[in-house]
Length: 463
Figure 1 (cartoon, rainbow, N blue to C red):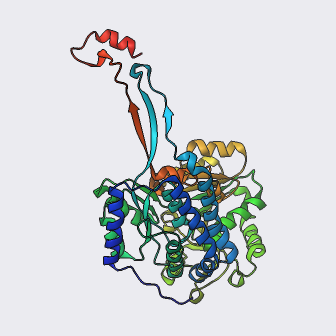
Figure 2 (tube, rainbow, N blue to C red; figure 1 turned 60 degrees about the horizontal axis):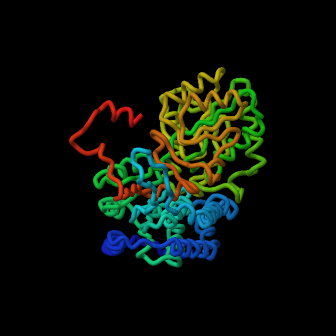
Figure 3 (cartoon, rainbow, N blue to C red; figure 1 turned 30 degrees about the horizontal axis):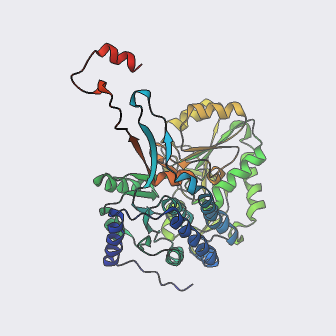
């Protein structure tokens, strides 16, 4: 694939932003039929560019065609189909109850798009984390500007081709850029901002949005724990935990960031990890199913966690020149070590051992609320964790797959972000449900007008 990646000139960004803004201010809102047609064009364009997307994901992230379809393309097509099926019903005005003392008025909720939205995507799942929010923005009737990640230039170029084939820039436009372009975009007034990325940039986005009182969804990350209890099926637990940690070479915001293993399994856990890795990948470096670290800077950052004081229990190798880093399971005694404080975002898996589930709960609650929490064990332990910890989402006896359910919202809480999407929730994110109360002129309730009468009578009427 020829590398012709270039940032969008600021003058071009300004022009496309202003044109979209004019139409937004005029409330030129696409009809439901137009939105459906737009999503069908998007679907056709994704299918048309599937091979190019797979090639780009392989080049930028080492993703196999299978993983690219599983975690990027297929997920996006499934979201598209879900919206095409449900958006007509979601977009209908619906009646709601009216209290008796407001009779004979009627009340309803009218879904309306926010207007012009900015969607900023990260590099780790660069296609689906841009396209999935876009699907909801379009089905809700918005105009959108998309900013793919410059860290994956080949994917960013294909995204631009996918969008150009489906939309005019008046409707959806792609801006390629980095710091300067981001700064320009964030200075503009948007009706909604949707950001996926790390907490540091998330704070910058939130501050910029606050300048214009713009609502924002922040999909961040955090240290998602994986708890392996004494009554679990250890083979299944390790297999699913290792898969969750190694898909996309650990560069997943909801990957198990660390694992807490009941002391009963201390002598078995690492051996099981080695066994599972051998079955999944063989020599991971030679496996077409094992991805690559995005760039040298990310490689150095992750490798830097393997510092003195970190005991390596299992290592599947690393080669910087090829951006390859296999799974490393480590023990870290120092609770102040960065491995316990920072989101790892790579295939390094710290392990701790515990005796009582109360220890796990205390540890989790002493840190920022995670984006996801994973528990392997029986119902009693699961219920205890659900009641006594807080996290963006939970998967019991599995990892990661909870995000594939269109009927479950996906999002963070506390330090892992705020706002949630997926399925109808994505439509809701980009929709303002306008409340309308319509009164009648043939009856006028005298109680609300001065001179006021008995407050005792008013209290009895409002009970």
